[in-house]
Structures are given as structure tokens and as C-alpha cells.
Length: 138
Ligand code: FES
Image (tube, rainbow, N blue to C red; front, side, top):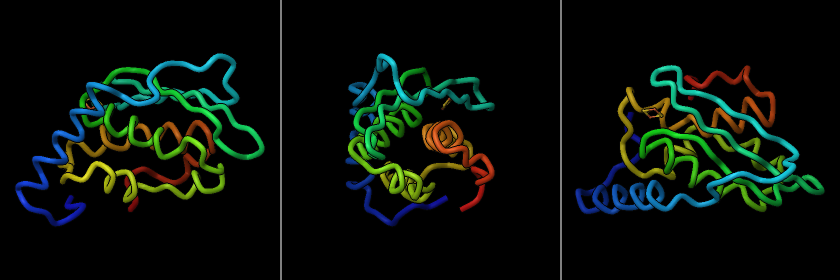
């Protein structure tokens, strides 16, 4: 799947950007007494990502993620938590696959799509009960 058009220099930039989020994940860890906590796995590899949310007055006041996975899955989770922090729940519900893939900035092969979207699955299935929005739709 192609998420954008870019040059080789762009690709290099985005690869380093992903590696930075992998090595220095933002919002990694656990929250004490979260309002919402949910984990999902990638059925293709068994890797797991979980998220803890603190919600106040309809806004995601704080968020952490935990678990294990490849660079794509960890970077995707790190980027998603950065985006979710401080966001009203109603806006968080509107985040979709194209947003998550676009944030990563590189072409994601079909074999890695579930890695890239694992954190979105945690958000959708766990926090919002949107399991009916199948992850393979666009
Ligand atoms: Fe397991 Fe990517 S290989 S999440």
C-alpha cells in the first residue's frame, strides 16, 4: 500500500523518525488507576500492545502504552499516544487507518499493516467498542 509519494531523502528521514520513536518511545509505561485499560495482540506474530487512558471531562488527559513488538508497531503506538494526549474522546474516535499510516510516513507493505495498525486496534476495540469497524477496511 502506498501512503504517500516521496523522495529517497524523505524515506531516509522517515526511517530515522520511526527508529527514534522505537528507541525512545513517547508515553511508554503504565498509568495508576486508569479509566480505561486495554490490550490487543497482532495475530500474525503474537506481539501485544496495551494502552492506559485517563479521561477527564471527555478529554484524554493522560495516556501510556506498553507491550512488545517490532519497530513499526512501537513507533506507531508512540506516535498515536502523542496525538491522543489532550484530545477530546469524540475527536479520538475519528482517527482512522489513513491517519495512522500517514503519520508513519513510509510505505507499509501488506505484511506489516497489522503491525502499523495494532495500536489503533487497541484504541478502537478497547476504548470505544468499535470492533465492528473492521481493521481491513479503508
Ligand atoms: Fe509483531 Fe510487528 S512483527 S507487531
